[in-house]
Length: 202
Length: 353
Image (cartoon, rainbow over all chains, first blue to last red; front, side, top):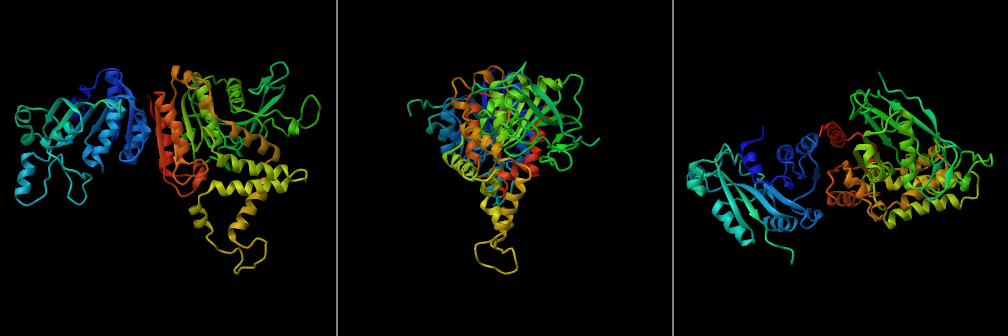
């Protein structure tokens, strides 16, 4: 069974879509989409064990650097581009989003919420936030950018994306009344379904 | 049971059933040297074909096999599970019909009258050997360098005959630099007045060998050390690297033929499958799962060559996996036991889907 968050994310992908999963990890999302929604597509990752696991599941994986090598993919070549818990780890989010809108029609993005109340309390007590979704120390975190959901949404709109759907989730990867009521305070992360800006004329 | 290491021979084409070649020529007799490892299952569904590189032969696995670190019991291509076939390619000189074979029409060796070869001719012969062995469908076909080019050609032309294609350190189109190296090697042979042109062939091999390793690999292996304790000067062999290349060149003469070198390198120069009209139509209709692998220090067929193959396949919406493996050893890395590389092949062959 796949993680609850990936199940929610998979529900946003239309049947028979061609999916590009950037930061695909062990390929469980694409394997699930292939089995349950007849989706095809490609995963991208660069971490050896993850790539081997994905290959072992029969998921096609192209090893490349998201920051510099997304140009390998053609314009409008995927229906959906997934960026699950990865935007905060790339060096140039603006450039990665520009590439995504060039490659895909829709994007599905998930990101940890730096604005979660626990994180705010940690900061008030003088420490960097830590939680199940941000389990790292400041010095070993792969996350090089931190955003609250409010900041992220403003940024996505600014980049020309249309937010079609937002699913705030708690630390177990599930939705709840609380996370929907005050996402920026009570959601540990959120999944967004986005319509990519039209880059055909660009 | 250890893999059998006995080379066998099959007469695959005869005057009644000649080999029709892509260039329009015909061969009335083709004998192929091959080896097999492991056991073909009752459904004939566990067969893997190994395509060798420029100077390889049928002896891929077992003692002294050129890919014995990859193919064998418990290895990445596990002969306890797979039935593995490797043959010497058409035009070669290790038991398969080539320019040193006898021309049945004259009773003399073919020499330069042997017809020019095309990548697809290799594939035609591989398929014929499969038929002879009772294998019409391959679980995987695997090859490095020229072997990878055969795999690519085979998968594009006859995708219905395989499930998975593994293309390692290969190219779908040689660059001008690649062709340049190839041309100088052939010139060394063609300008050698001796018969056989041993000096030319050794020189071609020495130069090619430089391109098979990275600069760092040469640094690590030899640096600027001298062969003797002190430099002896003059124009003879003085640096260790010179001695090594001379040894490689001379060793090559004991196992390779200059004419085969001419014919086989020429095939690579002209190989450009994606330039063909509708080159991907067949495999799109009958998708094959691809694994493409490059090595970061390979400058003979750099990662850019593999990426080009990947772009073509991926943009044709074929399932393609690509990895660039880190290794200091250059093009020859494909022959070495590099854990990430072998683990990748094992995982790819092991995936059920």
